[in-house]
Amino acid sequence: MMAHDMDELNALLEERARYEKWLAQLGARREQTPAHVFERVRADYSGRLAAVMDQLRDR
Image (cartoon, rainbow, N blue to C red; front, side, top):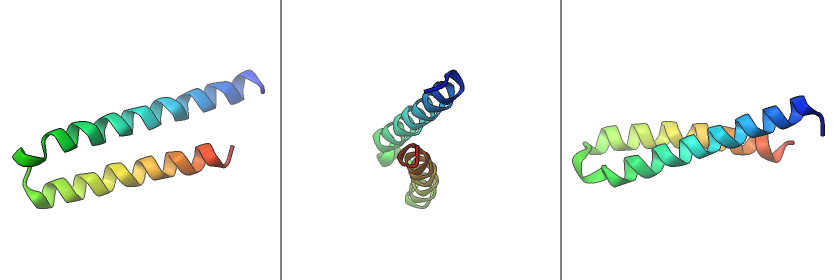
């Protein structure tokens, strides 16, 4: 694997970890968050995470 490929892989792994952290933090605040906001933000973060996971799978 080339250095550039490793850099891209590491960036994707960092991005995945960031979205997983955001989802965990959102889940921890579920009771304080209006339902419509929670669902909208969760859908956004989940979509971003799914896109990163697809990119990782395609490698």
